[in-house]
Image (cartoon, rainbow, N blue to C red; front, top):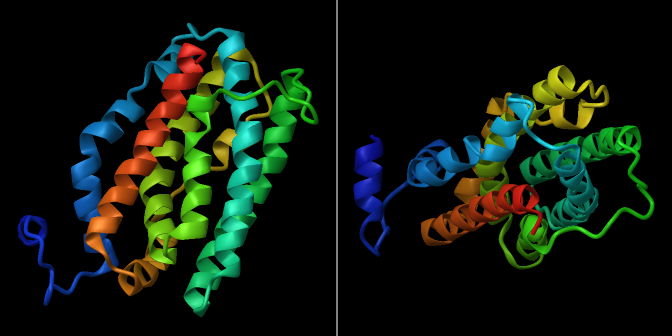
Length: 229
């Protein structure tokens, strides 16, 4: 099935091809596999697991998330305000609620690390491109674009943050890891909620671009906080 779908997408004309949300995501994830594998094997996370990550770089993660998460919340809230169908309202409301709960846990982590949550240090430009792109999608993309970006990204992000949570607790004695655990999934139900939205706005060229961009910005986040640039 996946080979057949991929063959259909190799051409420019997709007329007459009926795709379900699950199949769309299978194709996109197949194409993103090398990029996702790079993210999932990032030296930032591996160094934390080996107790080789400095406290300065751990704080760098938190500082940049203090910028990213509130901006993500605004982008998701704006997308929710654009929803026209019940499934769209339910899907984006789940995401808004989840990000809000995660934000409260992020504050606890920042406070444990001695970071001023009201006036945190400036974020790194390369680390926050993800949230800027999500905001751009919220304003200019379809709700299908935003849904694709999130369901493609969240399992990869969640895998890294789950590993990081374990490493920070076991190797560094950090207790306030609720923010990192908030994204561990599973994402099966959220993905099922996204299927009708993805199908409603189906545009494979757009979805390919969106998924590639959001994961490239995810890579930039990890690269930037690891390098300090």
